[in-house]
Length: 258
Ligand SMILES: C[S@@+](CC[C@H](N)C(=O)[O-])C[C@H]1O[C@@H](n2cnc3c(N)ncnc32)[C@H](O)[C@@H]1O
Image: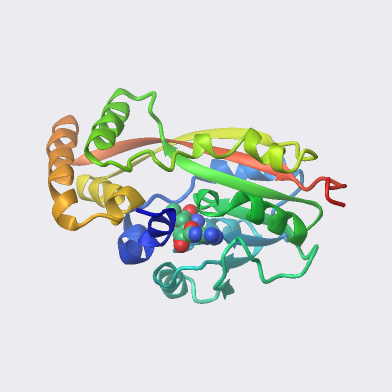
C-alpha cells in the first residue's frame, strides 16, 4: 500500500472523523500563542491539511483570520458544511497557492506527516512573513497510561500498518537538517476527554490504518476492543488520555537559501 493511499483514506471516513475525532484543548492554543510570542487574535493564518476543520475552528475562535487549506474532497465537504463562513482553498501543502510573505502563521494539525517535508517546508517558509512561524501538532494517545499502551500494542499486532506513520520518527531534528537556520520550540499539552464507548471505537476506525482496510478485516479488531475497553469502563464512558505534541518553528530572519 502506498503512502498516498493512507493520505487520501480520510475522505471515505470524513463524516465519522468529524463526529468522533477529538477537537484540540484550549491549552494547546495557549501554548501556541506563547510560542508565537504575541496574541493570536488578528494574525493571518493558513491551516493546512485542515480536514473537517477542527483546528481551523479552534484558531478562528482565538481570533486568527484563518484560511483552511485541504486537498481532499470528502474532508473539505465536511468543513464546508460545518463552517460555511470559513475561507477554504483546495490545495496541498506541497504547493501553497499563496503569495510570498503573506501570512503570520501556517499550521498543520495532525497533517504534516502527509506532506513531503523537503517541499512543504520551503513552501511554508515562503508564504510566512518575518515574525511569523510554522506550527505542527499531533494529538497522540498518552501511552504512559497502561490500558492505552496495551491497546496500541494489540492494534500494532492486528493491523500491519499500525504505527507506520508514527510522527515521532518524522519531525524534530529532521527539519533542521532541511533548514539549519530553524530553531524549533517544543511544547506538550496533556488532556483528557470522556466519550461513549461507541465514539471511542468510531474514533479508532477513522485512523488511516483502519480506513485503508476492508470493513471485513477491521470488524473483529473493533469487536475485540469493544469487549476489552467496555470491561475497563463498565458505565460505557471511556476516559481517553492524550498528549498534544506541538513543534513551533519561528521563521528565521535569514534562510540558508536566501
Ligand atoms: C488526520 S487529518 C487532520 C485534519 C485536521 N487538521 C484535524 O486536525 O482534524 C489529515 C489531513 O491531511 C490532509 N492531507 C493529506 N495529504 C496532504 C498534503 N500533502 N498537504 C496537506 N494536507 C494533506 C488529509 O486530506 C486530511 O484531511
